Amino acid sequence: MKFNFKYKKLVSVSISLFVLIFVFYKTTVEHIDIIYTNDLHGRLNILPKIEYYINQKNLDRGRLLLLDAGDFIQGTPESDFFKGESMVELFNAISYTAAVVGNHEFDFGEDNLVKLAQKAKFCFLGSNICDINDNLKPYITNYVVKNVGSVRAGIFGLLTKQARFIIAPQHIKNVEFKDEILTAKNVVDELVNQKVQLIICVSHMGYDEKKRPSEIVNDVLLAKEVPDIDIIIGGHTHRTYRKYIGKTLIVQTGAYGEKFGHLRISVFKPIKKVFRIKNRFISTNKLKDGETLQKIVKKYVAEVSKIFDNPVGFLETDLPHYRDKESPLGNFICDIMVQTARTDFAVTNSGGIRGSLNRGELRYRDIYNICPFDNTIVKTKLTGKDIKEIFEHSVSGKYGILQVSKEVKVVYNLKEPLGSRVKELYIKGKPVVENQIYSVTTNSFLASGGEGYHWFSKISLDDTHIKVRDVIKEHIQTRKVIKEKPQPGRIILLLE
Ligand SMILES: [Zn+2]
Image (cartoon, rainbow, N blue to C red; front, side, top):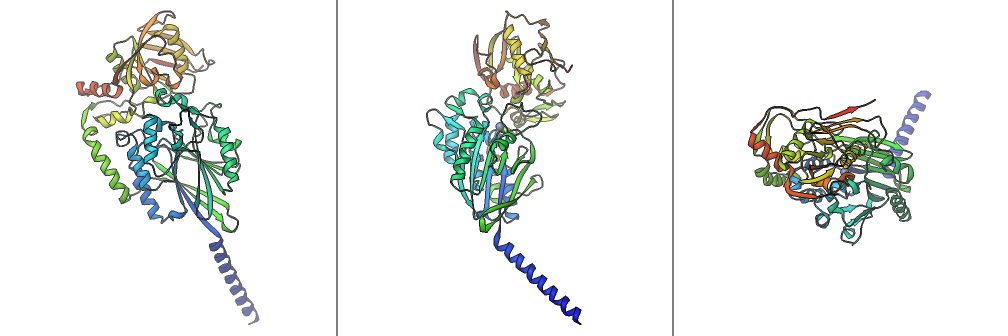
C-alpha cells in the first residue's frame, strides 16, 4: 500500500515534469525554415513542386526564407526565350526572399539584368559585384536583413571573381568583381553591428574538392576565413554536399532542380539563440505540382513549344559529351563549325556544350539544351605559336578541355608541368609550324576572350553572326538521319 502510494506520486510528478518541459519547450523554442535552390538554369517546372512542398508541410510563411544561390536563368527555351523574365515571375509568385546574381544572370547583358531586378519582388544580392557607372548597383543589394519569426537574419551574396573569365566580356564591360573574402569580412562586420542573430551567405562560388584549383576562393575557404557566417548556401559547382567548418554549415544541392534543400533551424526564443540546424535534400521527381505556379509554367511552355518541339531529324547513335577529354558531341559540333566557315580547323570550349545528344528523334529543344548560349561562329587567324599556347591553356586545369575538328590531332601529357603539356600537335596531318598563319573557326565567346583565351583576336576577327546551334540544326535537318559518331582519336591524353 505504502509502495503503491509512493509509486503513484512518482508517476504524477513525472507527468507534471514532462508537461512542464513540454510547455516550456513549446513556448521557448521556435522553428524557422529555409528552402533553398541553386543552379536551376531555367528549370521552370521545379517551382510548382516547391509550392506543393511548402503547402504540404504547412510551412509558416512568417518563419520561412526562400533563397537561391545563383544561375537561375539560362538553360531552357522557357527561360531564355523570355531572357529570364519567366523565372523571375515564378520566383515572385512563390515569394522568394533573395537570390545571389550568378555568372549566367549576366548572359543577356547588363541592361537585361537591371530589367530582371526591376521586375523582381525579391532581392538581387551581390556584395562583391561593383559597376563603374552605377547602372547596375542600385539593383544589386549588398545584404538584406529580414525578421523571420523572432530572429533577425542577415543575408548577403557573393559571386566568384572567376566570373570575369566565364561571362562573355561584352556583358561585363563596366562590372568589377571584388575580392570575395575581404568583401565578406566587411559585410559580416556590418551585420554583426546590426545585431542580427543569424548570418547567411548565398554564395555563387561553390566548392569542388577535386576540380577547383586551390587558389580559387570557395565556400570552405570562406567559412575558414569568416567564421561568423552561420550558413553558406553554395552554387556554381553543381555538387551536393553538407559539411561543417567550425560552426558554419555549408550546403549545396546539385543542379537543375533535381533536388532542393530544406533547413530547419531551432531557436531558443528567450535569448534568440540558434541551437540546432537540420538539413534535408528533397528530390523533386516524385513531388506533385502546386496549382498556382503550374498555371504560370503552362503559359510559358505553350508559348515556346510551337518553336522548339518540332522534329529536326534522327540520330542513330548516341553523342555523349565530356568536359575533360575528347567528346563525340564536341567532335560533331566542331566538324559542323569548320564546314560552315571553311577554315583550317575549328575549336570550341567544352563548357559551352551543356549535355549529350541521345539516339532517337531530335527536336530543336534538344539542340537548344546542349547549346543554350547565343554564341555565333567566328573566323579568325592564328600563328602556329599562338595555337600551341591555346592548347596549353586548354589543359591548364581551370576549365574544360578544348574540343577540336577532325583536322586536329593533339597529344597532351597531363603529368608534365603547366605550359609544357602539348607533346605533339598536327593540323591536317602536318606538325604545326610556329611562324605559319592558320585560319581558325571558333565561337564568339572564346573569340572575345572568354575562359582567358586572349589569343583569338590578335590578327583578325570575322564574326559570321550565325548562331552555332542554328548550324547544328540545319546540318541535321538537311541530312535527316545522322548514322554514326564522327571519327575519334583527335585528343590523346597521356598520364605518365
Ligand atoms: Zn555559375
